[in-house]
Image 1 (tube, one colour):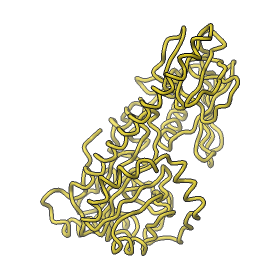
Image 2 (cartoon, rainbow, N blue to C red):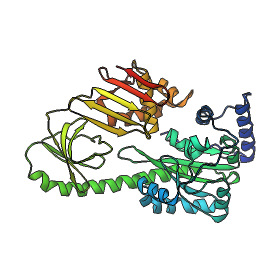
Image 3 (cartoon, helix red, strand yellow):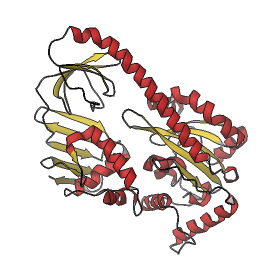
Length: 408
């Protein structure tokens, strides 16, 4: 991953930088030539929010989550057990710098906001409060919402914000991923008035985010080890191939089967028969902390039909074969990748996908990392050099405005 870049360089006068960024933004809004080019990540974000029709002067107030919805999102995020670590590492810095620490879910809803009373009052004026939505589609370019889109740490300062009301602020955010599934969990952010800016803040936030992901990995490894102990006597009584996996598909033990690195699990799994990539038709039985999978067929049937459904919220894929079907939720980034590939059966290079996703100047490194993650889920459905959906797979792309596109 590239080193997090601050919008203000060490030794640079932040007030002069703010003035320059203000002129850059004014030029971008008016169509005039800017004094300097905005950073590519900011330019791409401005393009997205402009295309979405967001008014830079601000829009109607968005309703806040009620307390019941907020508590439900906190529980569903899986981030609550990580709060002590985040508080210990970031809250003292936030309070010393007159900033606030903010934790959001994968859709940009503010789950927790902590810091000094004075800066929290200033944040209240922006409705930057628990239960508010801080994604790009709601408030425009900002460190939280834009880092969730690009899934990279990001600093947004002064005139880089899309909304006029956010110009007096500085924000540094880093996304949080499940280290096992790569699923986007949310983001952590330090925000405050523009004069509290520091060039190293985004690097600090990113380092703490990586520490949080390490803690998640260690917690998962301990859970898999407990599952392995539970699985041992179960497998000893069985005849024939069997595999025990955690809830997210990490193998704990196996009999008469090659052990995969991970089994791609559907979003909702119930006891009974299920088709799984790489295993084919299986019977699934719940175990404490995981599943016992017993393949019904020798080998796996190759997927024959792929539905990319962008009309659902969140977007999903549905894979259907002669022996069964399987579905999984997509991240917004993976939905965009599959949309681009479905529209181009001949394939796309890393450079072309970078432009598809991020506009001119998009990162090929980020594209390659995302394709690696996506191939862990879809396996033989995806091929590379160029990136494309495998020959012989019938693809159906459903989009809210464009209807249905078929390719093969």
